[in-house]
Length: 300
Image 1: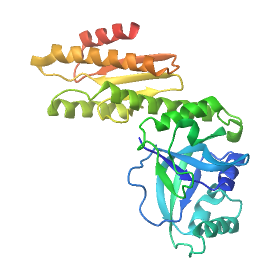
Image 2: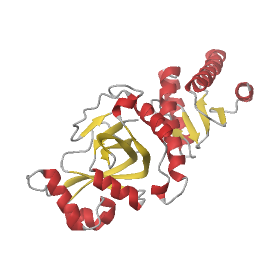
Image 3: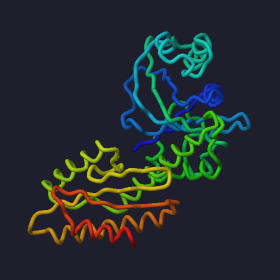
Image 4: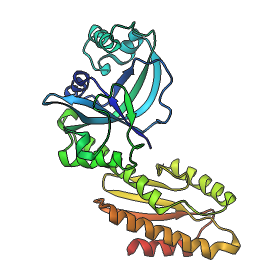
């Protein structure tokens, strides 16, 4: 799961905030292909000045959905005011300013973003020990300097508060924010727990099992293709595969138990405020003994 900071026009982002836009079109002058390590669901943080400070900070974020190459007229026809301006002429003027005297490209990369969340106050790089360039003019990957950076920003934003008013006075942005916080924390926890064991054949079988779970409303934990979870704003249900051969069944069962205990420990250490954490196994055939063991671990 990647996160990027993108230098953003503060007037454009304020327009989106005041309009309560939940989806936006984020245009780039560059006509090159999209980012090398940025995928659907990843976070784009708005790096901009606020009306109360000349210092740039993270003022909110949105989830990346897709990218299209569009002309200015196509952008306006498809997205209208979701481009961040109230008229096509104002959009053209903003693009011209960004081009700094260069011709406006025939086609621009348009990043379509959804589930926008704005912060009550900016999260400044200094408050999260980020070394991001204050004069950033394009974008920068956040977690390359520190794998914890996205979580640091989200944690500080949680302290500062989420701007509920900008989303038509609903609690939905708060729920979106909490789920994003859980996703990123679980990715870090999964890394601490370590790689899922098993032979190449067992790993392939595990992946097939977990893909089926993802068709039933679960999502992969970032960093693994063999474990998945279902999350709400205050609970997690994690599923891990129980794959074995006859000769190593007991060893695999012990590994599963140890893995679940390590997850429980790391989740407790993370300080996540969760109402419920539940573990389940998925297997190729009914496994009453293993399921009973996991249920006991859930009760501890």
